[in-house]
Length: 311
Image (cartoon, rainbow, N blue to C red; front, top):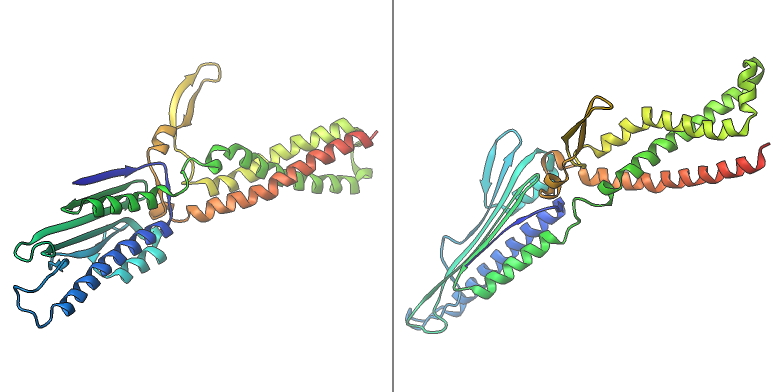
């Protein structure tokens, strides 16, 4: 019996990879412990009297394989080696693979006949793909439990196409306008301090509430696009969908590009390789948005007050 799955549209953090590695390592150690306990129980008995439910074969193992971004590849059975590399160097890892295999004989039902049982799991992580395969022989319930546990660990993660991606226009505009508003006030106070040196037409504009209020929003938008947009888009790099060609706009004489959303949600964001820093960037984007959207709301309120108070 084999269960095979390809997971899509998930953010798989380093913690999730560690959780899976830890779970499989614990299962492996559990079988070793059961076998060792049976060895102790059967000491002093003749071979015909010995009963083993978990007589492990030497092929039983848990192996870890890491391929680095410079194409170096290493395979070890050392759990701590795998954990240290995943935890401390995720950006240098291109592929991580865990192979869990348990094979044993069981004569607990009939001492004269042995049943061979085995169970295996293979989990492979790339930066944008995950493969899971669970197989077993004469261990149907155990195989299903293992498969469901691993699937739940993977599926119990945030979707890649989440609010940070879906509502990025709000976050980008909010960040840009906030920077623009701060700089617009600085510009306004500099002009105010030098009113006597300004041309008469500038003085008239500054005394016109319509020009002052609307002009501030226009200036904030322009400054925000020039200064804020490149900053916030640097945080969004490797988080948002890649663009693809859509059509040619004859009126503007320009090619139009749109998000390749289908490809985006058919893949994952496993936070290794170039996606290693995405968790920090997502958290930073949301933290910035919580502050900047309040700045924009305050400015909307101030603009209304200025409109009502100024003559």
